[in-house]
Amino acid sequence: MEVDAANPRRHELEQRAKLVESHALRRLGVLTEQLDLTASQQARIFPVLVRGSQSYDPTMRILSGSHARSLPSEEGGPGNPPLDKPQEQALVQKELDPVQSDELIERSISDLLIWEEIIGGLAHQLDQAVPGEVAEEAPERGMTGLPGKEPPVEEVPAAENPAPTPESRGGRNLFDQLDSGP
Image (cartoon, rainbow, N blue to C red; front, side):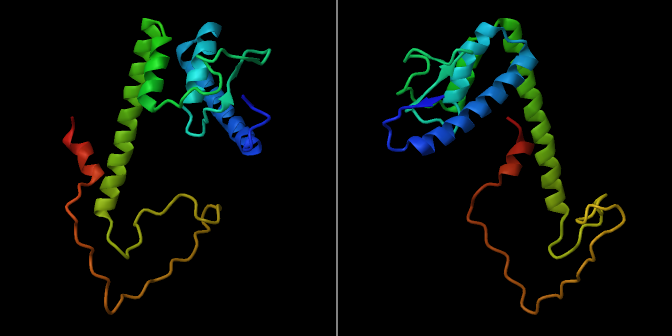
């Protein structure tokens, strides 16, 4: 990644460019491992991942290959707008062959199901929790990090005037959406 030397925010943008590049390279490495991307696919997908990064700035110039050459303006030169997640996903999908595309979709569905299960478990734990009580399941390792050396549990005295429960403002709970399905 490069930033124009005349840019007044050069120092800040150079730091951000390093973060954007390392994030895009990590993601590209994961995709390459999962989908067995060719070198050509990696070269085409890297600028897409860079532009999809939250810290990407259109004044950054994306470099590609071991010779650190600037990409043409339409691929990675300055002035390219950032991509939102749906745009990024569509452009990555466009670079994949049908088998790779199916594999990416299957992995995405699997990831969503795992997160749904995790969030559902957390929602269940929150539903079961009683304010002011200590959880009955003790962690395997305490805060000290040593087995069997749990920190002492302090008892919290009951408040004489407990705070009132806030009233609902008619909003919906995101966790309820998980149970209702599509």
